[in-house]
Image (cartoon, rainbow over all chains, first blue to last red; front, side, top):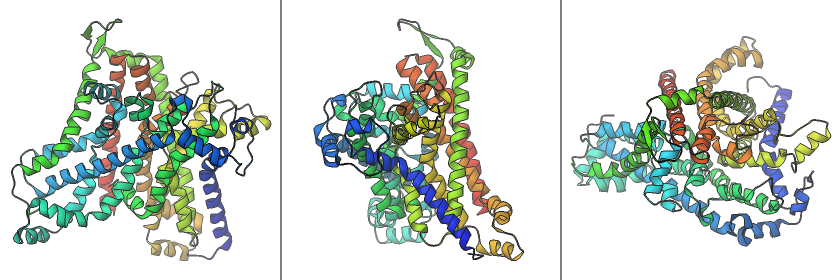
Length: 282
Length: 294
């Protein structure tokens, strides 16, 4: 602090608190709505304190199933979403780590070609090749499968770059020492490189888990069967403003259920999350 | 990219890159090539015959008033999202950089929306502001304001911009705060000794020093507004009312899947690809410069 200006500091706290209220209010309001019955939600304004339907709404969403999505309950949908997010996170980390390892620690023909092929994927997000990628999934028979939901999203230029940057900082002496001690490439990867990469892996895990959990366009395209929905797609299907039978109490509870897991991951792993966000942009 | 110590091996490195390269070829290069091929073909109305039409589809797309409208909508949407998310985040970051007590807590609370999916962010705002059941919509109408984003295109745009910018504040805040904290304190102290007040220091020292971060964030936010906001548009407005929120990515989806016009949709994909390549180049040129500054 350069000058001591108590009023300025007070103003700073005030602005931050207003900012946090602005950021938190939509989530808080939805949480409040998730504790009221549908009739109360449909006759606004809602009170600012929770109502008494918490258990009924969350129980109904988790175990009861919603008619609009074929009676599938949220336990199943949350399970799908968890499988998808974990598979994408782990898949991205594993294949990126392996390819970065090959590119940094070996010399082989086509090495630079492979490097540039991975780099170019940055310029081809799903959104710009929607229809032909969908056709590939249809041709491979992967509609409504976990493989179809996850494998196409596992290639990652940013994760590969992050591991490559990190591997380049490993001193040559370490590699030489391992080789003199008789370690082959796989042994070096497992016993030396993996333990050294722990923080990078944790950072990437947070980022890629959130990436997987929040996917929208891709699961929308490759799932028709309600039992394969991720929670965000299920939620979208449960909402209709035109029809009177939308179960708003279940919609609100499901929205909160869709928010909690990734937010908890960010809060619990905040240090790695910040590292991952900043490093993956280098 | 050169090390002295490497492993001699002929087969293993190919096995190691194989999974990544296989996914890249099957799900990235092949579909991209197909998009380029389809963009030059046209099917007859019954889907029986396709013929090569060269760049005709591009001419049709670029001459279509609906596409030009979508371009304009995307420009307005991206600029509004980027500017509002950047301004709010910068204000909060400057304030958070100033306070000592509670900084960690403020940061934690402001970071959480990053974990919320764009589509969910859209729904949260829709719950508050949709005319039939949103509490804030009711309060707006009671205040005499004619609020109905389901009929009024400008209001629908405001709603999706608010939801998209709301979600992006976390990310921008984190980078601005890191940028502010990297400024040497001695510079600011020297300016203070010379009699520059907080506002003057911000304008002449702090803002120029964080301008590389701001430029980087501008590019990232533009990419976000172009490509990652599909969920918000799909969940909140479906491009409506009357195409007033139909951004380019939504139009590609709509023409390809809903209207089944493959050639036209593929031509739009190719145009988007050119846009992404341009944006990626800008981003990387900038990253090179940032390395020199640091």
